Image (cartoon, rainbow, N blue to C red; front, side, top):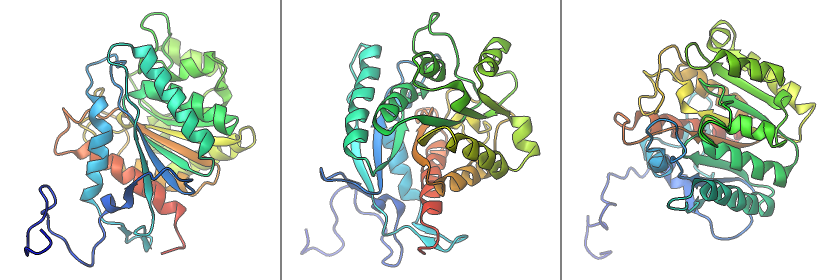
Length: 319
């Protein structure tokens, strides 16, 4: 084919501008060596979702969404074109056994986190249930963990009524002793999305809860600055969990649990940009996207933009 002008392999025949680097070019297959930068891991599990969800398809959709962007952040004069996102691939899920699937995530991630001590993982879910095995693995490999959770919901449901679902990850982590409630920060919790009982459970266990009213009234970076400073005094590393339903339904139509009154995309991107510059932040996951109900890949595109903003702050000064 190299001898035939204008002919490219199937699926590759797209416009190429020689002076533009597209963000999907940052993603390279992991070659088995030690990684000192960033690594992508997929956890395509959504059988544990309380509501109907095709979030198992999200890791691939988020990867594809990178092609929508360039590597240049004009507002910060930062170009990420020399950054590499080492793609470790996706965890193979058990076909019928939910508990085994979650255990596979924990076991696989633990092996990666333990062997890749200088790698910052970027994890694509899946529904929010994947955060429990992921954070368990992260804690075992990296030390005492603090979590900053962006979410409309507490995800502190009891484990008796429905088992380890996408509504229980942080209850699971607290009750297993993996995460102290005082080391969990929840941002974006909103009206008519939770019960009083689970709000009280969070308060009783020392969880820091910032509702959407507080997010609207305060600067998001002020909330994050005080949260990070408080966590750094008590933990070794911070893990960020982004449930995309923290966003208002107008910005994230591809979430299984959409609703009004949520965060706008600018605020979330500003928040992740800030966290990307914090050295104590050593992992991030993005969960709760169902590409089968998304509109023009809007929600997957925001997820890809979240990753780029996270990388952007960590590279400021290099542009």
